[in-house]
Amino acid sequence: MRIVTGGIAQETNTFQWQPTTLDDFQRPGFGSLLRGQEILDLGGTGTVYGGVIPAAMVQGVDLIPTTYASVMPGGRVAREAFDVLRTEILNGIKAALPVDGVLLVLHGAMALSDWDDAEGLLLRDVRELVGPDVPIVAPLDLHTNLSDEMIAYADALVGYREYPHTDMVEAGERAMNLLVATIRGDVKPAMAFTRLPLVVPNQSMVTTWQSPLKIAIDQTRVLEEQPAVLAASVFGGFPFADLPFTGVSTVVV
Image (cartoon, rainbow, N blue to C red; front, side):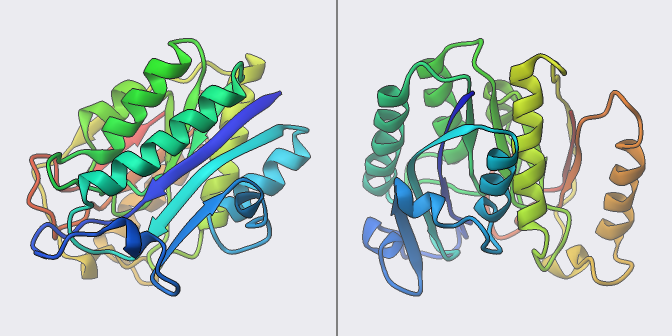
């Protein structure tokens, strides 16, 4: 089973005037730009890939890395930076074809200098490249601002459940296992989602106490006890983003 992986992760504060540049993605201690084996070396770390890579090994997957770029929260990502990273990922996927599936590690709240929905744009381009029959699964940050395009171009989205983010490894593992089950034909995922007319402060998303978001997230675990529910996520949204789809949302796979 051949699964190709890569991604771009940044949380955009649209009120920050200074753009996030390609140099920021490569600045030590601020960003990280990994290619090939450098991605596979994240196995065993507390990152999303710390869950993706061991799960792939257990499942006997040939995991093919492309490019993975991440950076601290900041202003809108410069279009030039996004285009460079997107091209690297798409070229890596193209070189790996044919593949059985794609696992994209994204954040869920990245906006560009000239486009509000970077994740939707990347998912669209990957979908156009691999076609309609190759499943695409993406783990997403709890602070995702969910767009229609993210739903349209992915087969399944799996969200973090903890804030602070102590379950990134678990989210990566769940995403990989769901992708493998889809490729094997054990499941055929379909998504339903709702965006609430609600923007909330980060403080109400802390899950180490009985916050409003924790109460909602606890219900996702109850939902997942149903055999037909493959994943259920509540996204608190990232409030420092003046976008049409900013806010709380839910996704059930």
